[in-house]
Image (cartoon, rainbow, N blue to C red; front, side, top):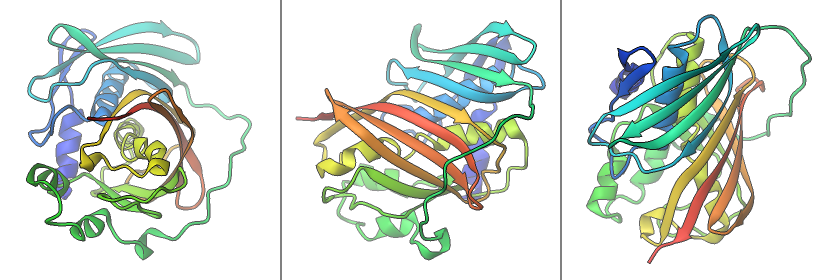
Length: 285
């Protein structure tokens, strides 16, 4: 699992091929399309490579086409503005000569200001919960071989759901879930790297929230789902090696789309990031 973290760090270590132009790759374990969190993380890395002494406070992104895991992704950065306090960047991800994703990110010189935050939900601690791997072990042999292999691959982010839903035959549940997350290996205190890894992780489990009330599993083949857009706000510094609670809810689903919101807290209750995403959820077949 530690190797999976190293692989993620290398995945985020983009190759610069020209001024404002970077190239990223996908892991060999990619399944049918590039994982959305990978593209978010890589695009944020590309933006950071053109910024000095400022920290990302927000990003807004659209997924335009499915990413092809077999070929590199080219990231083109537009240096939109460098102001006295804020820097803005726009990043376009390209494959096969077409845009597959775009991201706008804003960076700020750190400064003091007003402070308040919402309260972290009172939930069981991660040590008291089964791991995702333990939950999946209970359904070994019940899944198609390709999906079983996908589940069994090493993952850089450890996940411990507080209120898990059955993978194969889920009963309808409230569109709320709480998930503890952390990186499986020490990565240090670099703010940019921590943000990029959390951006990667923020696309995990979030879209599932709006499907929970409908009692359908994506492994059943009856559901077509995909992230459509993704927004994230970074409020305070954090370290992804420490357990963080990713609390999620879905206020609405309609028109084959579901809206999901997330709040990410450190274990001591600091709200360090907020997330919002709309995704496609459509009956398939």
